[in-house]
Amino acid sequence: MRAYVIALASVAAVAVATPAAAEGFRAELHAGWDHADVFGDGDSGILYGVGLGYDFKVGERVFLGVEANLDDSTQKECESNVLVTNDRLCVKAGRDISAAVRVGTDVSEAGKIYALAGYTNARFKVRYTDASGTDSEGDNLDGFRLGAGYQHAIGSNTYAKLEYRYSNYEAGVERHQALVGFGVNF
Image 1 (cartoon, one colour):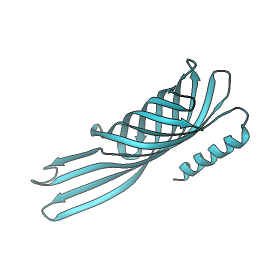
Image 2 (image 1 turned 90 degrees about the horizontal axis):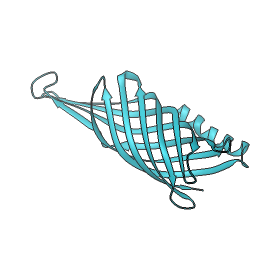
Image 3 (image 1 turned 180 degrees about the vertical axis):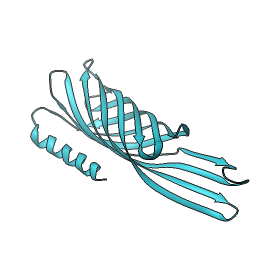
């Protein structure tokens, strides 16, 4: 959570430090495929969320940006007969908070490609049921995120994007996400 606050403070600092070169703030809705693995065993679901960012020019065709995202997922995997007959173990991905820096270049008048890197904190819930009852536990896992995408202007202040993200969390958890987004530039 501390990294999330630091990232938001960075957005404010960039906005104050480079107002003349700024492309400005952006806000978006996004959704797509989400796949979480624990030591190579996982399942897929649907990711959905919101993002806020600030992009500014650092060259004629190059831009730098910061962003923060809040996502949730339908990803859930359940297995039966894990430890004893008729037991059930379920692992569910929950909310995901991330802060990242992205750098990219204009590839056309309306399109740009970018790479991103940053911090992510995701909530995972584990539920185990057997003859003696049910135990539930949730944990927040810290990790890093890498990604790449393409953003295309579809109006004077709107855009659509395609993005791939890879996240690596503590405790052997990895996540792959492919999403589409629609946003507004301010």
